[in-house]
Length: 263
Image 1 (cartoon, rainbow, N blue to C red):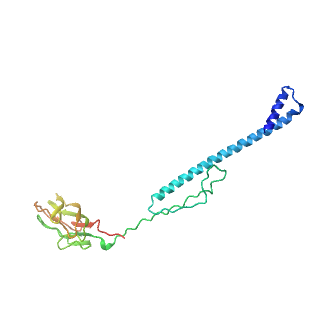
Image 2 (cartoon, rainbow, N blue to C red):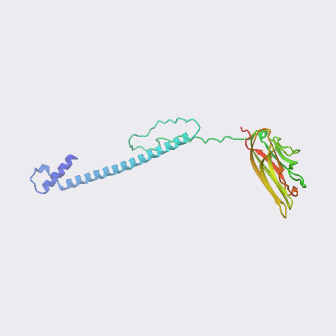
């Protein structure tokens, strides 16, 4: 290439009339051929450089994608309670850009199988829950009257007694109690939930010109053997009747939310 450029320079000097040896001069055709070869060579080098530049950019992008993939799977592994599994590969990221394709380079590790949630199945023998209602109306029950819900629908754990209207906790735990009371027209009652002779909740129900009902709800921590029942308030004189029939049920229910064991 250096020799060809020198020849071109001599041709130019000959062309402007400078005295040089005839052997140093080339014809116009020879110079045009030389020029065409040089331009073609420059074009080939330019195309090759452009191709290499595009390949380098492709390699850089592939490397960044692989790095992001590694970070993603590393975060997934760190958030899992399972032990990390080593992933081996015979290939490694190139130190410098290469003309080789990255399609068959590093393959992503297999996704860790999703952890199956542990099945929580309550043992029916450990469930404590009851539901009972009053079959017939209570006529003029008065104050300090314990409501005995005589018709039992549910009594898992055998904590409720339909003879006394009281619930005795078979186990210590956190319990929810609900009591619904209906009254006749022109009747009114304060109805309270009693925990070991201490009020744990109270509602007031009043029927003006028609039947009316109200529901109370309480969450109580009980010890084994604690007793819970429903009664009309001792310090207030009620009026009328507590109503219960097939259209509306005066009822009492409770269940433990911390007593069930799981496997």
